Length: 212
Image (cartoon, rainbow, N blue to C red):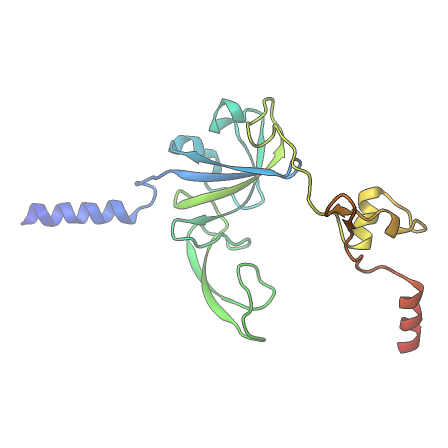
């Protein structure tokens, strides 16, 4: 009976300590320059050691993940633990906490106007209890990674806001933004353009003067 109790205590100890039992972690790596992303499953705990105890938005070298990632530098953008709770920026711990959320905070969507809700989120420090870790390529390495950096997927839609269109095409104030908007082909005869937001027109200025 004493041996059975001792064995059950050991099982409880190992199951309650996440660092002792390691399961495969998924790395969701995004390449903003090419518009691609790919998921890699890492079984070896030693490959992930450089990522542990790092905070969100910090940059980590990818040399430890293998030869194909040599020279790459990744930025930690988020993740979630094995129960699906997301990491939240600004919570300086590597475990789960319950916070009171209101409108405008990340990890929360307001259902009714003015309502607040207490939710569980995970801290922004990376640990071995994560199921998925989201990374963004900050610096490209020597070799291409198949399905991630060897191809380009152009954006389906162009910018909609007037200031963003000016920034994309490096336009000046006097240039007409309407001539540079990105049009999408529906078929051979028809094209579709988005309605430009925050466009300063004579009608808008007249309305502004009238209601002033």
